Image 1 (cartoon, rainbow, N blue to C red):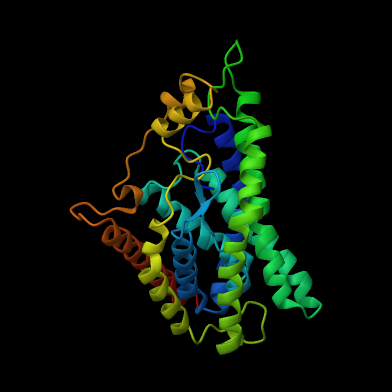
Image 2: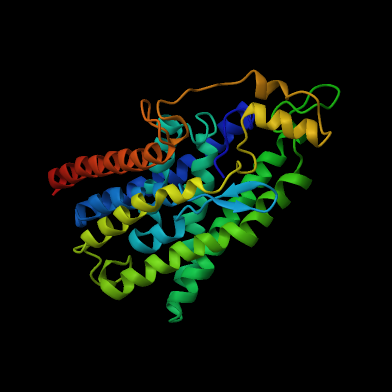
Length: 330
């Protein structure tokens, strides 16, 4: 679901930044107000960003040779509210793009819109509807399932519009070469049949665990003081230890191929014999910890675990900064 650079036109990237901006700004304003009332939200933002980042490291195989992963957008919205979840997921996506090369720099606005804006707000809206009827567990399941599938639909549309809107005079695509008839089924079927259920699993298991051991920690409950934050540190530690399981799934997610992988697919499918011009002449950003591997480590597993640990430390450090900010505003 992380759209790389050059798959979307610069015009599309600009539009997606503009689409994400008002949602992110609204969320920031809401979180600022909440931080003044409850400074405990600050460390929870670091926890939430860590949870989302780690969940995205657990790739699962999808029939057809690709992979997918959960995001945790609805789960975070249930835990800390959709506004805070938006900021947490956006922060995770920002770090993934700039430090780990997962998702593009120019396409960051699209990725934030899909995963940090659409998913938490859609998922929480559905969850809150069922919660009001006393069916919060069902709400968590349906909300997380529809939240990630709605985001996947947007990704399919954004990718599929490229050959329709941006092509040469003779009709050759300039960016993503696959039309809507390919991108929407590819994204939606993978998430409807596989990834959506992985999202449901993470959401429901963690939600029921928190509901059992610390129900007051859930957003919208009477207390919501986040007094038992240590239970989340335990969950994070467990996910870090288990993160190498994400390496078992081989293959690349649809629409996230390198230029070499895409060219090989295009030739094998007799779709094209060369890369679209925009893909071969676009932005090529080289991140420091590309593909979640740490320089000077020979073990892929060790690099993956260290990447997870580094990300969590960054998020917790950022939460410390927010704590200081919240104290100053008191």
